[in-house]
Image (cartoon, rainbow, N blue to C red):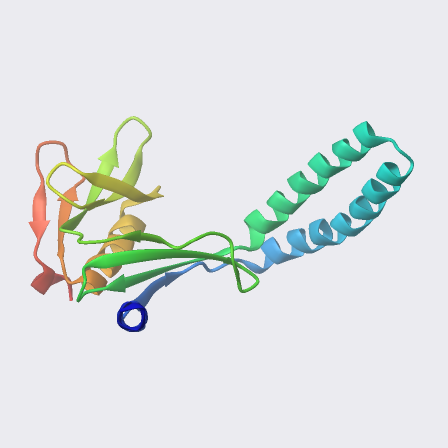
Length: 180
């Protein structure tokens, strides 16, 4: 039984289509390199402090190292989004230098996707709808064109309809046949 389940899961992942990959500008890496290099002397100093029985100062260096590592990782991690039109699911994958940062985030049985204007923050939210009342915000954009481009890529990848909810009280369906 386990062999069948494993094969089915692998086949499901093989059917996935990548629709988005983070494109990091070169200057992100230029800023992150010194941060990654800074971790080495911080680690050395932390070990030295613990060896000299100065644990409180050593803990301060652990916090500093963690902060520097999070800043560097924030500049260099990549996000990939996969869709599967057969199973109507979307998978978010986060990696740092090829290593997974966390378990993939998967949403299954997506009914449709929508672009909403958040009037309070003046941005555009991309939402996936799992049922008529259950929805998840998956991304936020500051301009309408980028939001629609992203939502269209997901809708095409999942082969579902797109709802334009950017005008309050004037929602418009964009059928999946018109997206391609």
